[in-house]
Image (tube, rainbow over the protein chains, first blue to last red):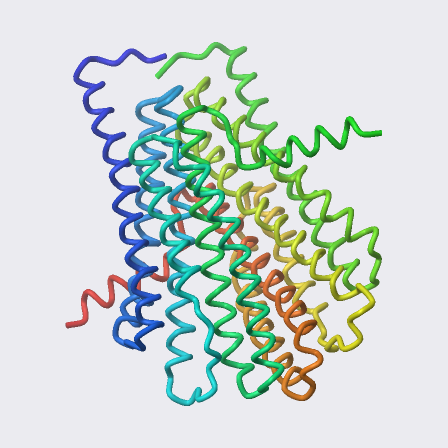
Amino acid sequence: MAKMSEHTYRQFDAELEAIRTGVLQMGGLVETQVANALEGLKTGNLGLLDRVIEGDHSINLLEVELADTCTQIIAKRQPTAIDLRLIMTVIKSIADLERIGDEAKKIAKAAKRLHAGDVPFAPRVELGYGAGLALDMLRSSLDSFARADISAVASVKDQDAEVDAYFKGVMRQLITFMMEDPRTITSSLDVLFIAKSIERIGDHAKNIAEYVVFLVQGRDVRYAKSAAAAAESKNTP
Amino acid sequence: MAKMSEHTYRQFDAELEAIRTGVLQMGGLVETQVANALEGLKTGNLGLLDRVIEGDHSINLLEVELADTCTQIIAKRQPTAIDLRLIMTVIKSIADLERIGDEAKKIAKAAKRLHAGDVPFAPRVELGYGAGLALDMLRSSLDSFARADISAVASVKDQDAEVDAYFKGVMRQLITFMMEDPRTITSSLDVLFIAKSIERIGDHAKNIAEYVVFLVQGRDVRYAKSAAAAAESKNTP
């Protein structure tokens, strides 16, 4: 390995700290985007929804910028072990954060359609519970990353199962609405897409939590269950 | 930079070639999964659909394995410039391939529900056109990666716009079906989710094509348009 001077080490540490902070800043922005999209959905504040839609491109650019910084650090510092794992975790996490940003934008667009005025037959479905869960998962996973602490990962996974069940419940309710009154179909589909976005935000937050396990323990746990299931099915005749 | 012997260089080349081949093998598997899911949807071959659903976990494991190999190569070989770009391209591409695999599984699950027998009122919507486009995009993007050739990237982007338009058309048709006969609502939603999956496969294929531009030209073009738009809006008072 290339030898580094004390000075170079300190610079390297500062660079790693900068990408760590970058993830948390990007995470904060994404969290605000999701919260604003949901707030706009609830209140019909079209200006707020427009800001969410316009705000997405800065999140996209932030991902490109951070990924680029990560590549430069690898090329310049030739990191190994935990340093390299941190950089890999950052690259993966910002991809999921970028996709959460996309979902916030989709929610804002659907919310605008629902509040457009010519939609008199919107189904009354409670989305706040699932939205709160997904936002909570996002906060927990970013917090786990910030503290390199995996103690919250199990509860994030439990919440993910809850969000999935919530989505199925919303879908059942929407089907009932649509069957009872076909005039609600178009707006029901928008509500369905919003619920789907909330479910996806939960999925991405769970991914980030699982990257923290990789960061701390050095192993990828995303498909631990499938791996175990695969091993099991091989053992079964 | 660490100095490498002739022998080490040859080993390094072999390792890079192995991950390159790994992406193409994983791509081939994912392509088969998508094609089989669509075939099962068309023919109602439940055994084929079950194989798609079971086959997804080996794709997930392949991603973990390839990502792990990439991390090891970075730690051991400390690659720079084009070698590092190749590894970064591989890491990003396999994440998208894994997600295409997820969509194939979702299509297979929805297809099973549609062919379950107790769904007498399935809407007759043509999905083959969009599915063919998305599969074609996937093949083109893998081919671009294999040849490190960006000449097909523009047409992949055009096809992506076509797939998006196709999805909107399917949705409009489905809304008509549901309004005319509310008994088709449940199965229409399954068809809608399948069309959405096809649209997402197109998105992921487009991502892979754009990573090839990064590989060849060394710049991330995914948000080139948003960057230009952002620069423009800054210039406008």
